[in-house]
Length: 178
Length: 362
Image 1: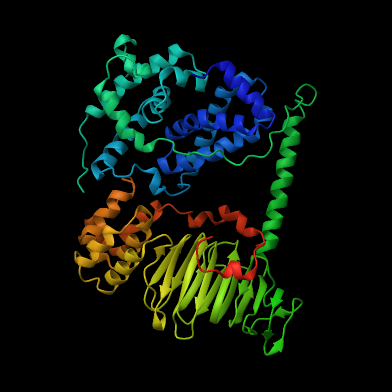
Image 2: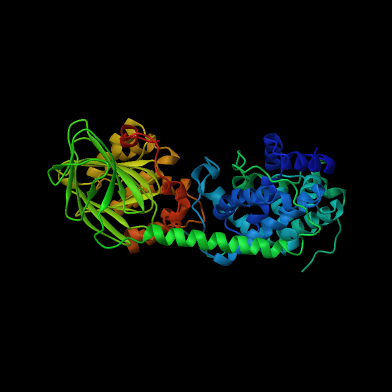
């Protein structure tokens, strides 16, 4: 498991231009950036923008004063980018076919979309945490470490968000006949 | 509404996947994994600058940054405007010739210019490279005959009567057009190779962005990594991904020719050899023959394209090919409106003429 120290060490090495450190940061934080974008944007646009956000963050790495503050810093860059993209309203790009689960039936796709929309209707505090857990597959401790949130807050957000989501999903789908 | 309960040991699976699996959480993990981040490579990043000194410059930094950004934005805007501006009828510069190249019958060299109304011809084993105003460049292969019809800001039109052309354009869609015996070919912000034969036959292969073909038969949109062939008389086929199998392409031609059979043997063969990358062909088929939506071609596209890009048979019956727009928007290619994202096309190509004129993917 990652530790705050190891993240700070990675950031320090990335500042020194070490390719492996940049890759390490990308591997750990790209899913976080993607999950945060997904909380506010359509999947196609989140996919497209995630790479841009990461590129911006790495280019602005010299502005970060404390290496250990990287998680909260990149999360705020991602939120800011998502707000900007949402204001533009026009979708940024198409959806890559390979990025949609191959072999999934139409029903599974509709179900995925419905679940995603249900999460998006939740209060903001729960939305991001649930997306990082259920879509990006991070555990609670990983979410805490990679967003800079306290583990207790993440656990409460997951618990309460999941309770709200269960209630949302219990409401039958309306007017969806093809 | 906010739940009042607090996390407990029952939430262990939700917290760190320990403890007994929660069926609903596990189901959501499975279903939503389709939207998971799948990027594998970090972006190409410039070397990270060393930590900036913050004490004395902290107050000035925002102003300095703002001034730098403003200067950069102004410079880029001025450069962009300059690229797109072109005095009416100003000749195009020939950049390079190889072998026998003539303009209006007179030998041409790398200092020659092609004026509106003039014809450039290349002989056997010859080639010519030209600047397309300031918006791009083109290369003509052997045995080509090109006429410059019109050139001015926002509108540059040529006529390729025969031969093979490579062009790379970085400008708003429709700025550059080529008339061929097969029809009109419009650049939508891209790089492409076009072959024209006097009988109307030929082919168009797109390497980046999109190209639109308009002629008496149909309008065809060809994205990067795809190709469309023109038959005798210029009738365009259905575009196909360059990686499509020969069996798929053969079935595609057959289905296009006999589109009345919605669920025939050719359609079955087509779908048997189709890959997700062939969605462009299936969608182009529906665009050309909306009746095919009554059969399995529609089902295959429904399964491949995202659920949020909602297209129904009822909508196609009512509105024809216009109802397919959500699927076109969901295809995995650059958006035409974002032509400027193809910025590498703004730079001159370094490859030689033979490599540029090759009729395959880069």
